[in-house]
Amino acid sequence: MEKNFPGKEKEFKAWVTKKVNKPFKISSVMDVTAGTLILWLGWFYFNGASASTMYAPRANSVSRIYMNTLVAAGAAAVTHTYLKPLCFR
Image 1 (cartoon, rainbow, N blue to C red):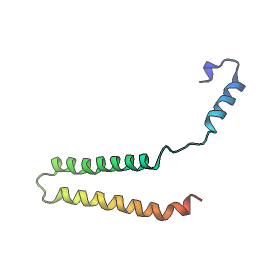
Image 2 (cartoon, rainbow, N blue to C red; image 1 turned 90 degrees about the horizontal axis):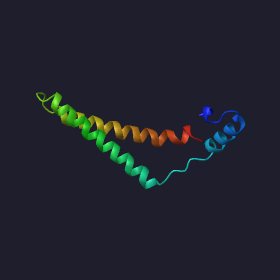
Image 3 (cartoon, rainbow, N blue to C red; image 1 turned 45 degrees about the horizontal axis):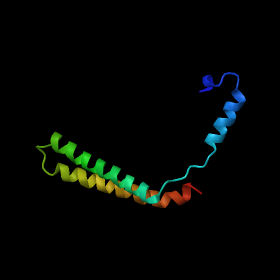
Image 4 (cartoon, rainbow, N blue to C red; image 1 turned 90 degrees about the vertical axis):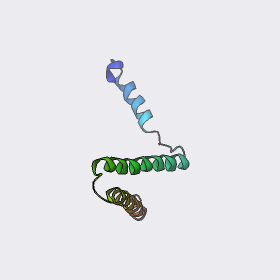
């Protein structure tokens, strides 16, 4: 990017500092929640569908994979809930 500002290093650094130091504003809690839910549902169904084609001869393999994915997501949510206040003060 500095190549676009030949001889103007001070102006470039001031421009970068002005752009970088702007606080990040989250758009909406609802948008973040909806995005997280969509991503999690996509991952949840991806795990089960990919296992159903690979492990078709095994009985209950898809249900075990769904349960494992569900428990892992729940454990991550509970862990995050308890550790966030300790880590981000």
